[in-house]
Image 1 (tube, helix red, strand yellow):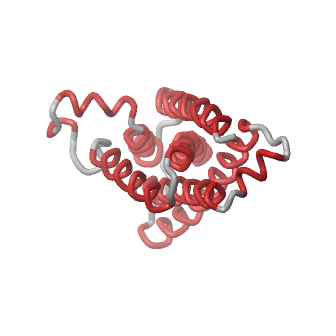
Image 2 (image 1 turned 120 degrees about the horizontal axis):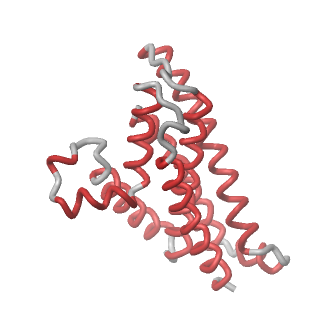
Length: 191
């Protein structure tokens, strides 16, 4: 289940980062902004597009998991898609933030790889909380990978719904909203 989360995170976040950095380097973003396109519209369109791409990948991943591993979602499938969309909202915004904050594609990739490795290792995907120092264990509350892993296990494996544990979606939406506001301000400063 966590591999599906990693799949959509890598593709959604990385593609968004590459898209924005490429547009910055080729001056396409500058041309778009000169047409009067608002920063909020630019960020919203990127987030929407790459979230939809990620949900399409999730569908493909679920089909492969069903065919190859007989994985059946115990909870409502629509709730799993809602959780994944909230996760992608946060991660695509993180990718845009990395893209806007770096100058070159190489730097963006380095920063993104560092962030991904750090967030994944602190997310409890590969190590339980009991094995972490208390400070590092407490970072999970602002880690989108923790919330998708926790929510995925609850929905896909335990059969719970989003209404049973809304905190997963709410935290991811909160993180995504904060990153969206930061992204809009940073895109405005690119003028």
